[in-house]
Image (tube, rainbow, N blue to C red):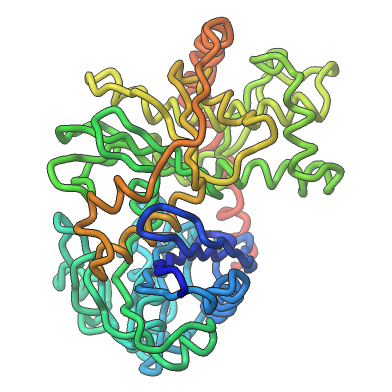
Amino acid sequence: MAEAAVLGIDLGTTEAKAALVTPGGRLVGLGRASYPLHTGPDGRAEQSPADWWAAVAAAVRSIDAAGSEVGAVCGVGQGPTLAVLDADAMPVRHAITWQDRRAGNGGFGLLPKLAWLAREEPASVARAAWLTTAWDALGLWLSGRAATALQGHETALDEAALRGAGVPPERVPAPVPVGSVLGPLRATAAAAMGLRAGTPVVAGVNDGMASVLGAGLRVAGDAVDTGGTSGGLAICSDRPLDLSGVYSAPAPLPGRWILGGAMAAIGASVDWLRTAVLRDRWTVDELFAAAAPVAPGADGLVFLPYLAGERAPVFDEAARGAFVGLTLAHGPAHLARAVLEGGAFAVRHVAEPILAAGIPLGELRPAGRPTPGDLWARIKADVLGVPAAIPTIGETAVLGAAILAASGAGAVPDLEAGVAAMTSTARRLDPDPAAHARYDERFAVYRDLYPALKPAFDAVAAAPSRRRRRRGR
């Protein structure tokens, strides 16, 4: 008899992932399929929802989910990303991803993207039946029901604010609770993925909060480094905090809070270095292997990973990436090491005000695929001075989707029981005291670079717009 399992799907920034997991936490299969990101000098960063769906179907089919009894399915995804769909749930235009910068400074949320679309493309808004997030679009394709999935503390977008932005409020689907059943899996979607029609479809959430579940954050001091293209930090707390540059909201589990923030381009910085700079000279594994023997501190080289502006903790779309301390003695291995350390410093930069406010950080759970020798996890442990606990299932966002599916369909008693049963730690890495002391010195330099360079960032960011104005005269 086939073993019962639940299916989680994650619409990430560059690829769709699908994980089939038993309610006891055994990974039956993991599939993935990538899709392109369309960027331009005007700040656009768009994707085709048709590419999303094709990748979802390919990812699910690659794990042969038809060979197992699938009890429920839940989709989570990148955000805030705006999908514009017609009455048949077909895309009116490309989705405007969270990386898109055309809404200007402060445009990291969904409402500024809606306002930009209404101002620049009123015809797209007029043609749309639904203006929704990536994960709610996925829920619509799976179940046929348009809904805005909200956690208990969240509220729907204000109707007055929507009207002020030029968006008819009825274009935004009505709210439902995250983790509730949207309906049965549609026959067309089931056929595309090789699943049984009628399987319960559970409402999802943004993949950052899904990672909180998939990393097993239950006790104050537990933390996840969400990894991926953007990167992010979430620390479990027993109380909320009001801190500048830090996200604070109730956790999916009752009585706990999540503190932290998402960055913009931590994982993307590694891809950029390997492809745009080194011209595919190294594979990903070879890049990490080259960085491994370089001593902590990269021989005086410090990297700011602001290649797509920056979200937490500075929230500045004009911020830019920088290598500081370059000399003739530095080579590609130093650049690689500095990029990895810059990502770790960015995590510590978000953690710093939280720790200063008295919230503990017990251990860091790095999400994503393990790197050779656990190098990046070791660097982050040394930078933060806390153990790195490597999750058994490293793709924490898609595991979080599976946990929501299990809870929503009743395969586990509740969400907390699902987190307890379906997450575990493979191994722990203790920080090296000598490396931590060295990184303390380097982090002080890193922290001072942004305020020192901000005037230059603002000037550089403004220059292209002045050139465009001159050409337009």
